[in-house]
Length: 180
Image (cartoon, rainbow, N blue to C red; front, side):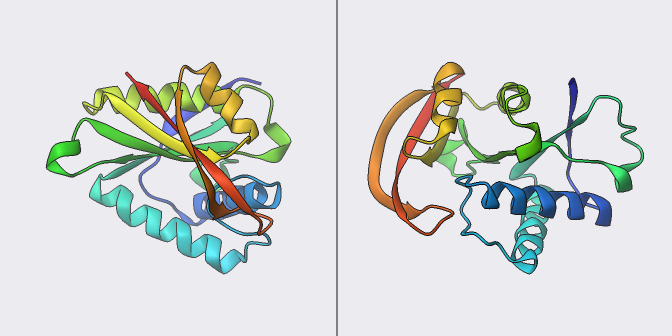
C-alpha cells in the first residue's frame, strides 16, 4: 500500500472521528502514547481537541497518513491510517529543537512502512522549521525502539518506572535523539 502524508491543522467531524478511532485502537493494542486502556471515547475526543488548539497556535504540527488513492478534498471520509506530531520548543534557548510525539499507526496497517514514512516526513518538517535536534521517548523495550534505531536515532538513556503502560503497569521510558 502506498500512503500519502498530509499536514492537518484543524479537524472537521469526520477527521476528529477518525483520529479518535486511531487513538483508541493504538491504546487498546498496547501503544505507549500516554493513555491507559480502555480509553473512554470522551477522553480521546478531549485529547484531540486540545491538540487542535496547539495546531492553531503553530507550536505543534501534525501529519496524517492516508491511502494514496483517497481524495483529500473529501475530508469527511478520510480513513486516517497513522499520525505523528512535532512539538516545537518555544523557549529562547531551545528554538533549535522539537519533540516527536504520538507516532501511531492503525493496528490493521502496521508493518507496511507507514511509521517510517511518517517519521521521514516529520524530520523534513522539522528541518523546514529550523529545527536541528529531535527528541522522543517510548516505553522501554517497545517495538518502536527498533524503528527509531533503524532511523538513526540515538538512545540517550532509560528512566526506570517512569510511566504506566497502556495496561496500567509501571515501565521504564527510553529517550532518543537525532541531530538533523
